[in-house]
Image (tube, rainbow, N blue to C red; front, side, top):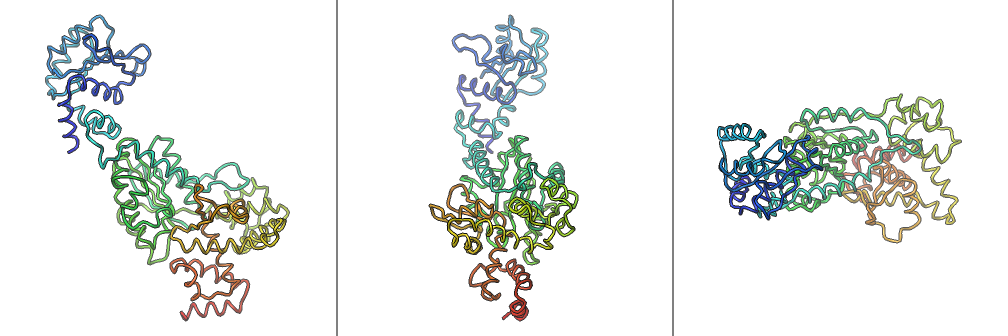
Length: 524
């Protein structure tokens, strides 16, 4: 056991090295503000609190004597040298093991003779304390014992922080034109389960704000000074084993081991977002294994966020349920909340159809953009999702028609459709754009349709549902049939596209809709 190695190494330290080691452990673990004393004279103490630091110890004056000699005579000798000092607590640090009866007898002697409270810290204190993650660096520096898997907790925290920060920047939590974020009761429901030590699987339809809930739970974790792992599953869609996950975080050991290690120190909140996007890939099993491995770890909260998929894909989610994850549903906004947002956007007397559309956060964002770009348009004319999204595209094309390059403006949506297709053929739904970025790319970014990942040249659609819609619209305009989709995009991505194409054909081209549904039914 690592703790046994630490124990032996402490006991083998030279006297001055043991003094330095013990004082640093005591300073960090129990007595903040301890100041080492000079070694030029034997003053019977090796560290103490000062007038500037004693308040950090509840107003108590603390003196520490560290010694390789674990006897009462040595203890009394050190105390006699400090008789003239104001002392509330005298700490005697030793590398040997002293039984409780002996400790109690020593405490009585020091109390009677000097009037001080004695605290004995022996090897039964130092070995397990030093084995805690926050002392890994100290243990390595003094004892040359590396941390588990050679991953120092400070390095782990740095990797977690940087990866989490990048992922959180890609989560959209605000509605254009609305300053405040939308309060969600699901946040408290998840935290209630965390308090009970339960892992949570948060499911719901697209546009219900699942990622936003994960975002705010990550912020709350940070506010509590916990380590936070917010992992966008799409970023690791390429991996095939735990080694790939380890490399993503630049770790020497497994991600689960790193989470456990920092969890013992600060507590750790793990949030896996966009799980549904990789559910047909090997990476999904890797992340599921990782999530299950986090179950039961000390002070580790785990949340997996996913849309509910079709029956054959539910098996992986069922694995999480069977392992002990509590499934919570994320619902769309209630009508009262949607009405409140409409009021902030200056939308008065919305129709029932508009209110229903606005209960979906993606639709609400598009409504806000239409309101901003075309304030005189009567939003009550919109009766369903296709109406809404077609209107958004129409307004985008109208606004872009003022471009100096009219041909480019008219081709903006077809370009978006081409990018959507490119993303659908990547496991992570991303696509590469070379530099300098064309104006069309800059305009799609400005409209909030796509975003770049950390200046890498890799882009993704901010909303996958809109990505699917744009490609589907373009496919309908090209009169594609179901069998042709498999030649353009990955097979497992065709299901959502077929649903959109069916609705768009029904709306815009009844003749082709008949051919489309016939091929679907006959499997031609």
